Length: 201
Image (tube, rainbow, N blue to C red):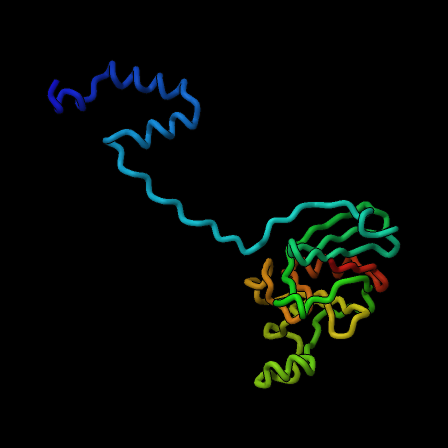
């Protein structure tokens, strides 16, 4: 049989081959396609770049004894913030940014002591030591690193806040605070109360 007649398509060969492929498992179809000498090699798939780490919904009971005033759990490992309302009827899960290093990360129990819409920002003394070129004060607005809303915690200098730089969410990118998308901190801001429990793990 000549090479030309072997590769020449015929209706019978096409129908028989199509029926065989339809009846084959998906894996077998892939193998047949890759072994077909007439089919060009598939283009390699581009790697998937994820800005937000994977996270899942969880229950509050392993972390809090009750939901008095509501509860916020920040999981710095999965880079997610969980919120439960005081009556347990509302649960929210938000991607977050977390501190750059373990040394900058504070863990443990605290609470919301102040809520500010349109916060201003001043770097801490340690931040200014590391970055002497930074301004000492930034008013509310699009250049403010706290975004549109901030929840101040009982730990000095620590906050849960928004950010105008959305590239930071899902990453180790802060100097100690927990950052959310502005639309998420706005929603969380509306649900939390002074005294809402906060746990960072």
